[in-house]
Structures are given as C-alpha cells and as structure tokens.
Amino acid sequence: MGENIKTIILANATISNGNKGCIALCYSVLYLVDYILSQRDIPYRLYLTDSHEDEGKHSVCISGKNIQYESIGYPTPNSWKHLLGYISQFRKNYRLYKIFKQADYIMDIGQGDSFADIYGAKRFDKIDRIHRTARFLSKPYILLPQTIGPFTNPVIRQKAIKSITGASLVMTRDGQSLDYVKELAGSKPHVKEFIDVAFFLPYTKMNFDNGFVHVGLNISGLLWNGGYTRNNQFGLKTDYQQIIKKVLTWFLSIDNVKVHLISHVATGEKNVENDYEVAFDLWKTMHHDRLVLAPLFLSPIDAKSYIAGMDFFMGARMHATIAAFSAGVPVVPMAYSRKFNGLFLDTLSYLHLIDLKEDDENTILTMVKEEFANRDSLQQEIADRMNTTVSTQKEKLIKVLTAYLCP
Image (cartoon, rainbow, N blue to C red; front, side, top):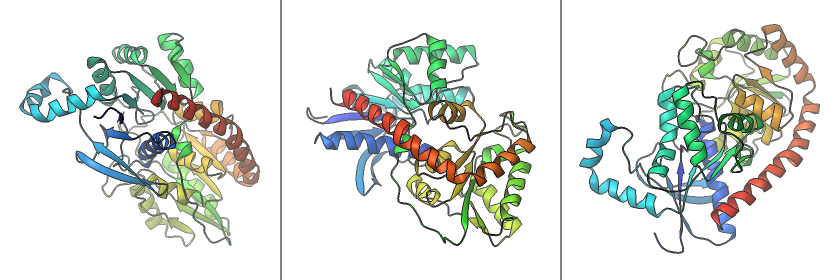
C-alpha cells in the first residue's frame, strides 16, 4: 500500500442509491476524512465496500473537490453457501484480502440506522458483516456516528454486543443510543455520544420566488405503503396517507403558500420505499398550481441545496429534516422511530416534533398550524442550536477522528 499512504476502508456507506439520506452519510464522511487528512498533507487511499457501484476506481465532487475512492467487495464469503463461489474467484478475493490486511483503518457508518433489527435479520447480518470480517482478520474497526439498536431478537442482540465490545471506538449519534448501548453491553469507555455527520454536508442554497411562502413536504414512501410488510409495520397511531392529504390541503388553502413535494428516497422504479412515486402521483392527482413537484435529485447535496431554499419544512425521512435543520430552515420532523426522538428531543433539545406513533390526527394538525405560525421563532431556535450544540459536536468529532486517523 505504500508506507506513507493512509489506507482506509469505509463500510455500509452507499454512494449509489435512491436513498439520499444514506448517500448524505457517505458524502459527509468522505468530506470529513478528506478535510482532516488534507489539512495535514497526508496522502490517503480510500475503499468503499458497500457503495452499490461496479468495483473499481471512482470519484465524487464534494464542495468543489474531487475525492477519489475505490469500490471493492469483501475478502470473506457472506455465508457458507457462498464459499464455493469465493474459492472459484481466488485471485480476486486474495487481492481483497491483501487490501483488508494492509488497511490502516476500518470505519463503519451502518447506513445510519441499520445496526438494529427493526428492518429484519437479513439487513442486520449485512450491516454486521464488516465487524465480523474485521474480527476474523484481526483488524481494528470503529462505528461512526449512528443509531444503535433496538435489538429485540435475542440472537441478533448477542451478535450486536459482540460487535460493540470488539470495536476500538463506538460513536452513537444520540443520547438514547448511548444509553441503550450501556444497558446492552455495560458502560464502556470506548462508547461515546456524537451527532449525525449529515449536519456537516456542504450545500449551496437555492433561491425561490419571494412572493410566496415556500413549504417543503417530504412524504415517506415507506410509511405511505405501510412499511415493508405493508400493514403499518411501524405502528403509526393515525393513517399516514390521510394525515398527509389533510396537511397538504390545509397548506394549499393559504393563498400565498407554495408546497414543494421533496423526495429524499427517489428512484425511477416503483417500490415500497420510493418517495418520488408517491409525490408524483399526488402532484398529478391534485393538479394544483401552487403544488410543486421537486426534481429527482442526483445527489444529497442537490437535495439539501433545494431544501435550504424553503421557508418551512416537514418530513418523515430523518435526513431530509437534518438537511433542513442544518440549513437553518424551520422544520417539523415527523418521527416514526426513536432515531428521531433521540436526535431532536434529546441531543438538540428541539421539541417541535410530531410523533406518528403517539400523536392522533387532531394533535398533528394542530401542531402543524401552530409551528407554521411560529416559524420565525423556530428559525431562531435552530440558529442557536447550530451555533452551540452542533458546532461543539463538530469540533469534538473532528478532534476524535483526527486522533484516530493521525495518531
């Protein structure tokens, strides 16, 4: 690898995916790693194991700089049934083995919230693969800021404890995850609380016609379809489709409001997670001159830049709401899991949150109207949190990553 070149493996960080939240995490880590090492003129080589791209060399432009990386696979089979296939590709897998064995650092972002069993055992095993591989090859690894848990399945829980205790450093992105890890595996000095790295994703604010109040609404295709099981998998208290339609109708009843349907998970195909499919169908059906279908964004930076131009924002995709918050836009997150509550209520002390698992329809509609009327106050509160909590967390994260990457 070269004695003076730092080699880094980043796992569970997709850069080619319809979910702009997952890509935002990847972009943000690449941006932070490049910032830290470039500031010290340290050359590095970066490998992504789960980029969802063809294997080989690639680059991405972030904040005007092309960051180089190589997309690779794993040097170990995912299961015994894949063993024969790995043996048949010995030369390729031996190269991957050498990359892993000679790497200086292995870092895992867990797709933000997937080191848990809320999405099923198959997804957990896919996320946990990097930890198993690192331990098999006796390589140190860290968990970058992410939600950890819950683990209701006892078998998965034991696997998770093994991966947590075996890590060199575990970074939770909220206080609830920190407390959960302590409850799960005991108090450990290598487990620390940080904040979601997407707060630090660069953007360029888009400007819209100032004759209107521009309201951004992110509709989760996953919630709209009832989750992967299509039967209210996440246990929402009210009918998500109905509440979205009522919120839309109320905003469009205000003459100077334009509503932008902003998708944060968007693909060209129909599937249970596709926000854009739902937004397009609503836009086409309602056919209102003040209802805007936002573009199908090609990067999380484009999505954040568009969201930054809003005067008010609501959404059920957490990284869409993080994009709004970190761009100073008054935002009301629509929570369906504790990853929202841990971040906004606990870490940020930001109480303007709809809890879809607890709040009924009347409570939600009342809160939307009140928060929209008080959006100037929300904007001031967000500016305060960005200048205090988020700024402090950024300094802390850069300090810890610098110590890790530049010992």
